Image (cartoon, rainbow, N blue to C red; front, side, top):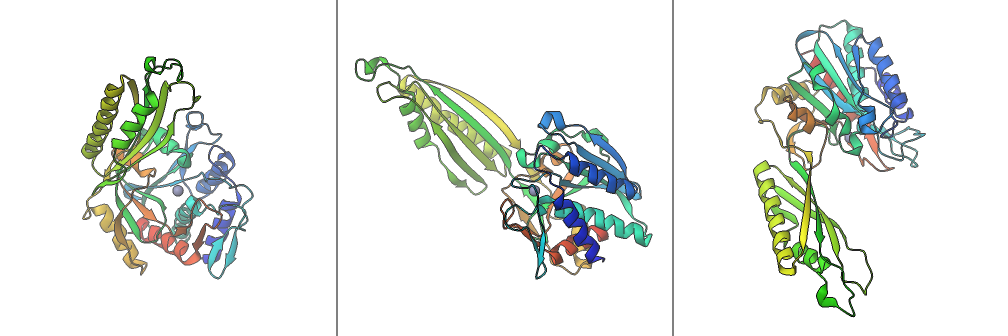
Length: 364
Ligand SMILES: [Zn+2]
């Protein structure tokens, strides 16, 4: 392994800023490097749908057998401009004024370095496709709008998780619900009985909806409770937002029904009405522990001499859209830590490990 080249590659990528919506320059850099490695490149022009000057990069490199899709995201959170990576005692940090961008450029660096190693050695390798998405951090937008007809792979690895060795094969459905309760305004001093108190109705509903770990496989939350107005007016509108994450779609749907029932009953008590909007953020992912995809990853970690383990995650990632488009997928940890903060960092050893794992997978 050419560790120096891997570090330089990673530094080059994080120095090329690509905050969500502003990925163009980084897209161009990665396209150039993929082209030099022999990839056929397709620009998946989803920028206008995502509010970005960039695009998804879909690229393929012919080799043996059925292709495998490797996926990572091109964008970073803020503050991600003028990143100055520093290597200290085997760990790479930013200078503390920005994020580092290991999320998810460590993954992109690992993929390109692994392919460069293979090409340099002239080794036979498997067919590989990449999907590098934009605007992941804005709600998985690039992956949501990606043109999956361009992808031939039936199996995929998303490289966008923290702990090295972690193989995430289960992800919950993530659904947001927006409730608005409507009542009737009236003068609170002169004619309160003519009003319908939307705030009280909404508060009653919120009080009877469970939050937190509501069962073994589901977490729920309520936020953004709003009913702006003056003290001398009966509140005619109140609204609140909810989020449900469940490893079972059916369970999630039952919780949504229960929440709606609570709102309906509270509205009935006060004579109010309600509106409800449901927004899908992600679908359930469930890849069996004994799938050949997971076996392949385990084998690669074994060859790299590192431990790996299966886990579930309550977080969201591009894998949900890949899975929903009929591609079996797991999400791998790449070693990044404290992501979305100015103390984000990654150990060189972990960056080497994930590169080696990809190398073994592509030369299996
Ligand atoms: Zn990420």
